[in-house]
Length: 223
Image (cartoon, rainbow, N blue to C red; front, side, top):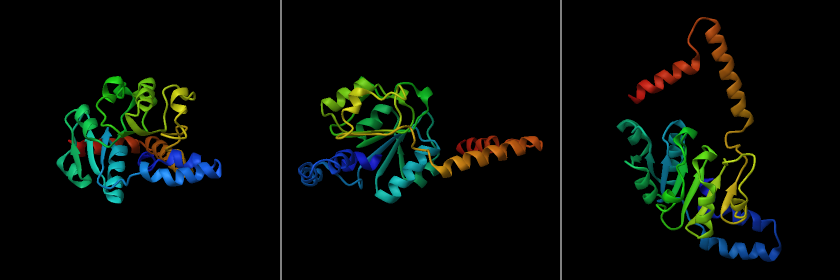
């Protein structure tokens, strides 16, 4: 989804299934809209396991600069290992980012709204793989209509399974919209089931649940 916002993939995909003239026009025009990820700043809102995994991949594979904002700053070892820089405020993160990715829990409230959208630099990008409630979709549609953002990618939506009609109008140009299935694979669900059985077996044998043990170890390492 991050790649799609830099490489104008919604536009390219929709054009490839259209007429030959539209295909050719996109072939010629997409270069003017596309950018490499290398050297651009990725701003992660929430820096738990998912945020850290994204940071690792985007720095190692694409050479992106990593910044993050979280209610708790991570240790120096974590930051150094992920080449990540902490931002003291959400505003400073957004203002310095070329692409903002939401990795925060739903309880974080509405992070992207009319006010915070004004902090985005012209032509910046937004990716949401967290929860739809984090985004004011009408304010986001306003930003797209006013060309303040160059691209968005949303796997989650505020009123699922209903997708915003206003955002849907950009599905073939500036928006990649998917059906809350970023983590939906056969292998992932096999892992869910295996972990569930391991937890049950641990508790029935008088031990702590595997998930609880791992959570405690993770919290201890952070402190």
